[in-house]
Amino acid sequence: MNAKKRIQVLMRVGSGGQQSASASPFPIEVIERVIKVTAMTGLIPLSLDLLSSLMHPESKALPSPIAYTAVLNALRKNGRIDRMEETLAALASLSRRITKTLPQSSSNTTGVDVVSFNTYLAALCDAAVDELPFVSSSSDRENDEMNNFDWEFSDANNSTDGATSPSEKYLYKSVNLLKGDVARTRFMLSGDPDLYSYNSILAAAAKCSKSSINANKFTDTIVQACLRGMKDRDIKGDVFTYNARIEAALANKSSDSDNSEGGKDVSPAVTDGEKKAIDLIDQLWADPDIDPDRYTINLALVPFFHAGRRDFIWSMLKTFYQTNANANNSKLVSSAFEAFLNTLVQSGEVDFAREVFGAFFLSSRDRQHKKNANDK
Image (cartoon, rainbow, N blue to C red):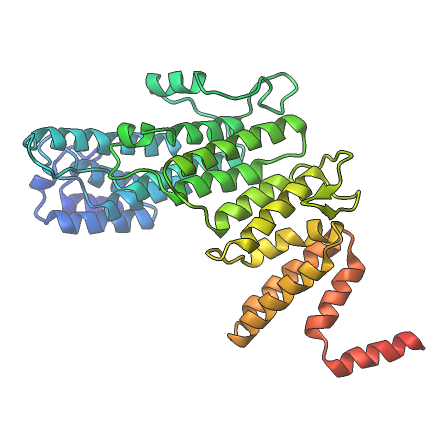
């Protein structure tokens, strides 16, 4: 008898979760722990059966978020968006039934944990980034919302035949879920979407960005929709929000005759996307509540080099090096500077990369020796 069958017999739950948890000799808390373990070890069908056994009509409470979020994480790893939707729908249905049994005067409410929704949202973003085939929802309401989405422009895609790509559809579906109270109502969430929800979509939009005009329009629409939603919910962005927006901006390789940025002289080599990225990075550096990270610096290197703002680059690098070297984060410093040097070399700035390496990783004796060799 294999492990799956043994657990089924032990827990008295058959395929499809026919028996309710009340028929099990174990407390619900034990069943929830087993659900988590089976999900994490790849026994997804069994974890789903066990979860289903806790969601029968006689259930008086939702399963623990730890249990159903573990199942959703396992489904996400396997790309099973359809089963994630079914699981969330079942949880929402149970939550509605439980809520109806509460006295009207009761202030107690039960709802599905927002973390589980964010796991589902992350799976949609994974599908967008991986360019997986789009699977239409079985929900008529959702399909109507998809058809009525305000694209803000007529050619919101990068396909020559005018068809919206699967990646765009997944991002568009994700944005739809964050509109108003759509997610909270559909999935009976215990709270509104949060910063993690928006950052997931922004990061996916950045990764899906292409250098075509139509793709830039689509990405900008997704970004602006997220920023409006964050503003409406009074959610302030963090460094991950900025990094995603900067990465999305840098995908725009077009340029025009206006080569000024914030009153500063900018090289003709600076693209429109780099100008926007520079503006965002300047905003981030001016915000006392947000600390740029190694990824921000890596994104900033090329646009600021093209803009002739080398002093700013040196300041970023020195601050990062001193902060982490003093904290004995040698591995972080090494991996970060490896990425920095890679970025510069790949962009053709080999000489500047050599300067950076010499300034931070060559001793004064090594630098003098190198200088003497060059003089000869």
